[in-house]
Image 1: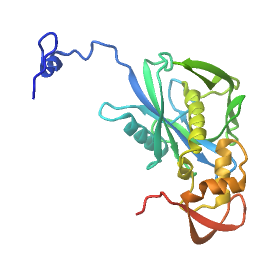
Image 2: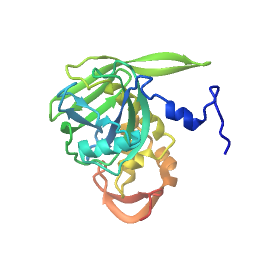
Image 3: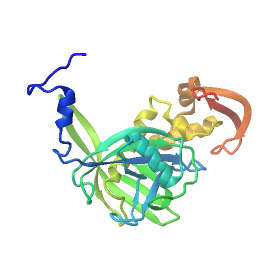
Image 4: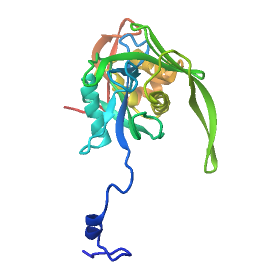
Length: 276
């Protein structure tokens, strides 16, 4: 192998042996997780939040997450933190966005990598530095981003506005959070990740099979359509929906009770499931 030298005549080995890793200030890195689900009656889209047990933002609700350790990737940290703070594992996760505003964490310079996950509804247990873990109803329209937990009597709401920004030759329309309009708030800048996660979820539902992470092994067509309607925020025509989704489904010989139809219906399976 050629030993290429730089302008100072150093090989890579020589350069690395002299390199000072403290030459530049280094931020800390965290991983945060947006975990979406649906309530058992398929009435609300849900988001899992944990209650912070320590400063900063003590007693505020936040996304599950924590610091990335030196020997793990951000993805590995996201899986570990989700297990430690909620007891949940083996969950679909995809990277959402990186948030790097220098003022986003009052402790120090912290960059966070957000991940989005989806699961069928399940109870979660708080652990690690979370004093509680609760599912919140989450919704977004043209005016508001709203998170509600009726059991706790908590509503967290942000007003929204439409902004336009230019990137290269293209001008984009984007919905952004304008201000907090409720007494309670999310910790840090987690409302930005929630807003981005909802937009990503709605967008990808149109061209991916993401929604099948929200159903059990067996499900009915009315229930699946209801899931799509909840996430997209609009009613869908039954025939159009069935035509669009049919090639992704495998009918079974089993009938199960439809959650939203409250009667027996053919049970389907997702064709793309992994066979054991």
